[in-house]
Image (tube, rainbow, N blue to C red):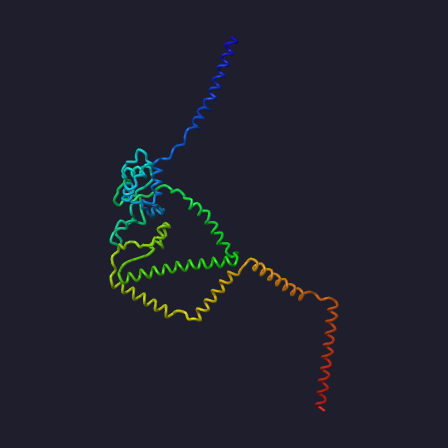
Amino acid sequence: MAGKGAKATSAKAAEKEKGKKAPASRSSRGGSQPAPKKDVYQLFAEKVRDNKQLESRWAIMQETRVEYFRGKDFTTFIKTHPEVGEILGPDKYMEAEEIVNTLLSKNLVIRCDRVWKTVRPGKKKLSSWPAHLEIHQEQVFTENDGFYAWMFLKRRTLWQTILSFVWPLFALAVCLFPVYPYQCKIVVLYSCAGALLFIVSLLLLRAAIFGILWVLLGKRVWFFPNINAEETTFRELLRFWPEKDEGERPKWTSRLFYATVTVLVILLLRHHAPDEAARARYQKKVSNIIDDVLEWSPKLALSGMMDKHAEDNATETGSYNSHAPTTTEEKTIAAAEDVDADESQDRADHADDMRTRSSEA
């Protein structure tokens, strides 16, 4: 009996040990499982979005700035760049329509439609790249007049990461401009003035070219067409060549009217321009302001504060001495001066009496 009890006890102990080891073995297996792989369509979408061969633009959709492409451009891109679809594996031979429908089902892209669906006054046709979009009711691929916006965040590039650290330093440097050395202030001043002069000159030249071509030829030609755009990329901002004029040609009467108004405004401004003396006074005033900013330094500010403090102390000391009580010696001297003054007054009165009597005699 004792032997059977010992065997039973040992069997129970072995079962407990197995029960303790089993979860550990399961956990070890669970830890060795590979991490879930990223969806191939997600990788495909990121690769296509980073590719510059697929033309895309930025627009506003429901108060959100989105990047979108056209269906016909995507079809052409897939046909001319089949190597992009290698990442899809077995689905690399799929048509553009099937790929986009899959992207739509995975919420990687969304089909959009233009907000204004009618031709605006003065335009011949709808814009090829609308600036405002809305969500389309039918989320299926259409090649003609179909717009598709990316629904995932674009990967941050190294350049954007560097700029995110540089901008706070730049703001701090701007705030510390008054404490710069004099030579650094000169460099910053002339650099900013040169950049501002370049921008203003470019805008004036651009407007002059547009006005001349519009009046003479009736063509709307804007060089640097995106320079005043609020929502655009840096690449589109520096685009030089103007867009194709899709509007109707203006009438010659309206062109003649605006040309006459422009000439009259120029003559009026020339007639009321300030004279040489006024320009000299304004230039001197501006120069004084700039010199005060350039010549300011912490040392001068501290020395000015010390001088002012010393003057205030001297003023307070003088006022205290003027109101301080007099001593005994000072009182005696003051009394003697009063006596002398009385005696001199008596002598003067006596002399006046003698002169009066002599004159009467």
